[in-house]
Image (cartoon, rainbow, N blue to C red):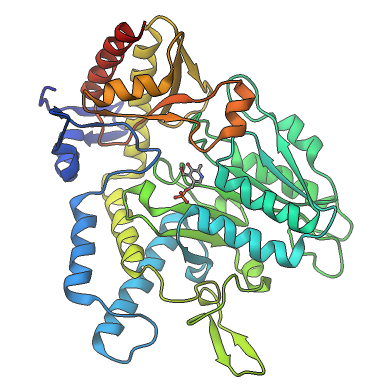
Length: 438
Ligand code: PLP
């Protein structure tokens, strides 16, 4: 691969020197199977810049201590760093309050928290939960489990051949029994960027038609409760600016590891009023105010939902990743990745027999494809020998694969540290693999 500096300047709106950026990511300079690594599996997890790695090292070398409980200096420093990280997340997603930011183990943890806590309090037999055809298993299975437990009904928004949600069909699914709508902001398999703002507005309008409800989810006095909205932001936050107040969602879930931070930590954003009325998710230390054998009272937000010693360094590492993204500029990231996607799409379409799965008008940097007469995993295995990491399989979206009547896809997903030269290398490797396979 040529070591050429690629400075991309687009119509004066952004500037991203990708070779400079790549210097921050040590792993990008290793070899795999004797070839320079081309990492196109960013949808599964992203790589970490030195700045994040340093913060994690420094924490264990200088600050390590348990939080919220110690009077000593180390504990106070760790607590300060962790709570500062919460504020960094709050500002990043523009939440109104920092106690609306709950640290979890990741998107999966966040969705399970809502399914358990909201489900326990508000879902009854016959109630309806709406998801979409393109959800990740982690935004399907928790709702299925809840429906099974409570006798509730799961409804699914269909999509078209391009991989776009059918909003007219969605409107028809909304009913007075709809208690929750959970959709992904960006599809990990198709790359579709869903019109989540429009979806949320449709739910708000629907809620306002319910008896005694004024469009929110919590009726002012005795009216009917409307549906709440959870957005799975796992694939959106790494690529685009998210403003939870502008969206007006009730819950927003995402994972640190997909946005250049550590694994095992993520966020559940929830509106204060809704979080306040929900029961705790798990019991243990930190989530209590007082405990006696007769009765326990619960802590306030956000601690009510954070039982036990959390992933302290994970939270601090996530804040470092956010600082890094802010330093690069989210608008720069978005514009550059869009350019990479267009470049790769254009190139791959020239290969005979290629079928792109997911051709929505509005897409993030995910390129899923199939090639006539070949199996995606064979392609993945051959190009791995050439140092190229892509994903193959159902991408934890089996119902979506069934919708397209395919067993899986090959998926290249790009981050802002990828280059057009890497895409050229990938296309050449793909052509070589296809020659071997046909
Ligand atoms: N939702 C989407 C859209 C995803 O792509 C993923 C992971 O690939 C998840 C949820 C689950 O994220 P995690 O495994 O970090 O909890």
